Length: 176
Image (cartoon, rainbow, N blue to C red; front, side, top):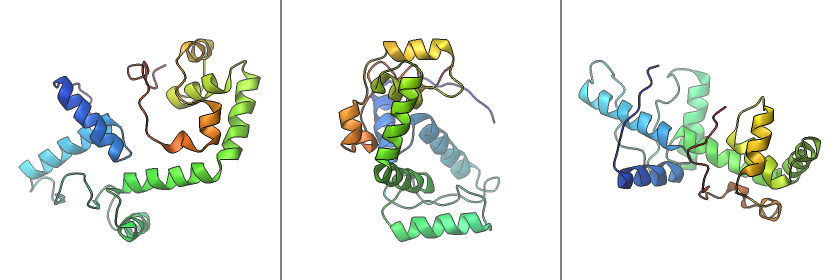
């Protein structure tokens, strides 16, 4: 897979971020999907499975290889939902429901992780959601210096599945 960067005006970057968040996705994945759609439209003989629409309120398929049981099951679940935008959005929706159902288990696990590593609940949440395992000493120090993105009370109130901006974290992402 090729990687490259693009420059877009700030207004477009903001719009892409909003669009991606509404789909339960990240901006980079959305842009990648949009570029694939453009190439498929431009070269239909090269890419025969051209979707009929951009990511929106309509279900889109073709994300998983066709003619497999998994593809059929995901398409079935997506179509039965009727309101999801893509198989990825269906996965996000189901993950949110899962996290809401098991909030107390995750609270216990995050609290244990925080206590084991000398972090507050909030710093542990930042680390666990913004960096990738395995964690270095630098990662732990980084997490301690970051602004709170979700308090323990908000977590327990079931607010972890809600979209919110994370000031100061956009450029740090899951870098190591």
